Structure formats: structure tokens, C-alpha cells
Image (cartoon, rainbow, N blue to C red):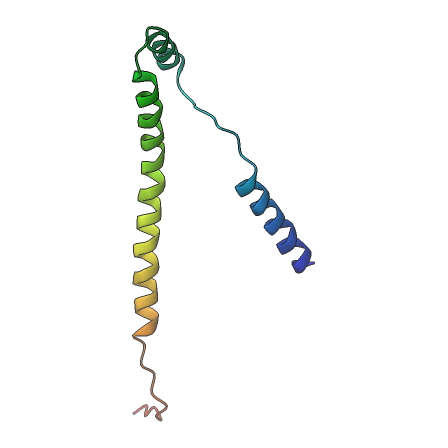
Length: 91
């Protein structure tokens, strides 16, 4: 059962990585502003799309950084454990 679940997860992951559409998401006001500027010959709309993508990536990078720091701290705690095979005297 676990092997089937892992196989399905792998197929879904590969599908998400290989099948994609180019999309640009904007609020209604930004879309209208970008469309009007492109019609007039300006390239500000492309810059607006790039700015939105940068703003979208920032929270993911922050979470990844915090996760990496947490992982390194947790790993460091487990590595520093020195347990001796000595008899414990309870007096």
C-alpha cells in the first residue's frame, strides 16, 4: 500500500513539474494599467509582471531560509550528543 502511495505521489510530482502554462496574475487595476501602457507602446507592463513575480517569490524564500536554519540547528543538536557506555552510580 505504501509503495502505491509513493508511486502516485511521484507521478503527480513529475506531472506538476513537466506540465505548465504561462500565466500572469494581476489585480484588475494593474491589468488595466498594464494593457493601456502596452497599447501606447510602453514596456511598463512587462516590468509590472516581473515585479509581481519577485513579490511572489519573497515569502517562499523567507520560509525556505527559516526552514534551513531550523534544520541545521536541529541537526547540530543531535550530532553533539556524546553518550558514554559507562555504569551509572546512583548514590
